[in-house]
Image (cartoon, rainbow, N blue to C red):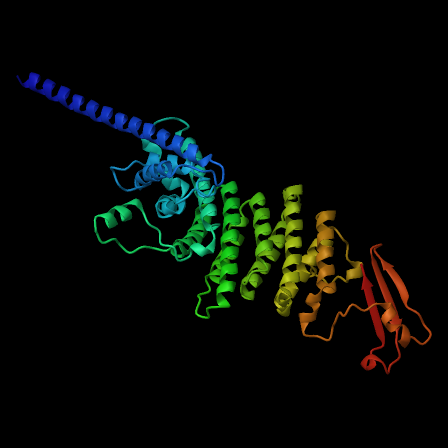
Length: 456
């Protein structure tokens, strides 16, 4: 009897385990079937043309189905994560095609998007690795997570592009209308502006956890678009409302620092970060932020050009040239950066490093410029450094050095009436620079004896 009892017990336990396994597999298959159904319906409605007429009854049923699917948020055992992921993967264009009433779904989309943009890839893999077994399962899960984040970023890009006249528009759900019909008191509603203010910090957090190069570039562009639209709107609001809060300046400051920090990890990503910084340079950001950017860019050039010769590649030199060009744009658009002599000193150091291949202070003895040997990293780097030097001396930024140096668009013809007998003398240097020199009378120009014009 004892053996029979043990045998029956073991068979019963095995049967219960098999039933649980079958139930789990059935639930998983059911979730996958529902996920494919949601993917199909999202693809159908997302493929509609802009302003294409769709019967309101179809739209209302579609929105209701999406609402039921998006309510399956993470953390609830009764709600499927696969359905949410399927909706996000197949509805990246849902807010772009101007479907009537689509803004009703913004709050429901933001909840899962916030979840997927806040977690990193390792956490997602560890949470989903036990769902299936396979050699390449981790890489498959990683690729899926990257695609989900990409679609989430594209959805946010569509949402922040919506006009600002929706600012005070309350966002309602289907339950709200049902509660109103039954005279049930609804909860406090949020306006569209409150959701918009939630998106930009979410993008900045996503940039910190992003590990994919393509997704990071999308984040650069989305952050740039969000900050630009917010700054433009706040400039208009400031003209009518003095108490309007300046959120754009705070967003831009954090965005610039995050982009600088993120862009140093990959050369392709670094070039994208430089393009984004150039597009942001004219926006209302504190000059202290740009001082920090200038120092980081100078440090990057210094670090790259001091690497061992075997590490010097064409790609690395391209990033250095792009950094020089970014510095040129930076000092042109933000000339007050040159009021800080520390910034000016760093610029002169990297100019000398780019042209000659080493800095003057790196040598044990004093080397005059005329005796210095030039060994630049490459001709492209040397030309980029020379161009930065030209802009540093030629551009209007020199006006802010608090000296008597000025640039008023003068040329030789301006002083023809002041000449007594000697004409200008011209000297060519390096085949691309022309000096025009002339000695003037002592009683002119506050006792100055010499005028020099530089043309490149």
